[in-house]
Amino acid sequence: MSMLKEKILVLGGKTGMLGQALVKGAIARGYEVETLGREDGDILDYEFLKEKIQQINPQIVFNAIAYTAVDKAEEDEQNASAVNKRLPEMLACILKGTSVFLVHYSTDFVFGGKQYTPYTEKDEPCPLSVYGATKLAGEQALAKLENCAILRTAWLFGEGRKNFVSTILKYAQEKNSLRVVADQFGSPTYTKDLAEMTFLVLKNHGTGIFHAVNSGQASWCELASEAVKILNLHVFVEPIETKDWPQKAVRPAYSVLSTQKLTQMYGYSPRPWVQALQEYIFENMNELKQNGEQHV
Ligand SMILES: NC(=O)c1ccc[n+]([C@@H]2O[C@H](COP(=O)([O-])OP(=O)(O)OC[C@H]3O[C@@H](n4cnc5c(N)ncnc54)[C@H](OP(=O)(O)O)[C@@H]3O)[C@@H](O)[C@H]2O)c1
Picture (cartoon, rainbow, N blue to C red):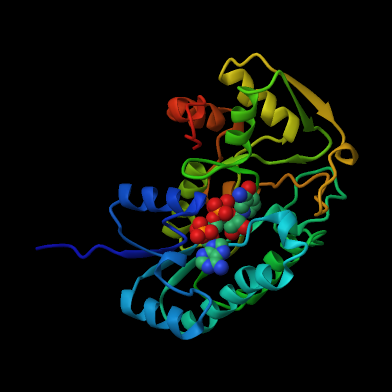
């Protein structure tokens, strides 16, 4: 007798950094996987999205589509809002009353950064940027959907797309010194580990908001220094202040997330970010060591 596999639809599964890790994780766990993204048509068209979801008929949907260009969003609020707020609104409408389980992703940038202890799911959001505000609106759009978990994550690195770590390692091989912000603190997180936390929540049918990051905390400068050290690159990483690296969007000075809820509910403790970073770099050594245009 053949067992029917559960089908997961990964939105952004072809090109998104997290999307690709989710696809890999789902295949490894024996799920049937389909993806949907820009390459298939206008995902922001309600009728198109609804028809595609009905056609694919998944038991589970992961929404890894987002407008993630934090600075660009400051001058492109309409598009940021269409992807980060309107898409979750449409998913809430399409999935309401069905048994489909949705996992959606949000960000540490929903917080204002005015505290010095890790943010819990009960802390009050206070976004400082258009990106943060539109992501918060996306969370709110899904608040009433029954079969839905929202995983807030942060400072992602992983395969398949340019990210902070891969960019630092690229420049570290081209320059003698790098200037990196040392007065913003967050929770660096490997997409592979976030995928694992996603399947943990899914297995337990956890609903509501969860903070899902690797353990520990770092400044951007500490993250860059650690990455450079792992690859044994001889480059000076100079700590600088936020005011000396002007960017369009305001970022929280402190946005470390507490994963206490995941631990209390499921007995799960994410591994430290340094360990996850080592695995990411060791697994992708060839691509991360600059060779031509290759850029993980
Ligand atoms: N990256 C981080 O450091 C970070 C930190 C905190 C939270 N998060 C959250 O984690 C989740 C995953 O982030 P990520 O870093 O994996 O994002 P990403 O690599 O930037 O991928 C975003 C995905 O969304 C798709 N997309 C964007 N606009 C679209 C549109 N108008 N129509 C169709 N597809 C569109 C992209 O497609 P194209 O490739 O075609 O553009 C891509 O597949 C997001 O919810 C993000 O807010 C990320």
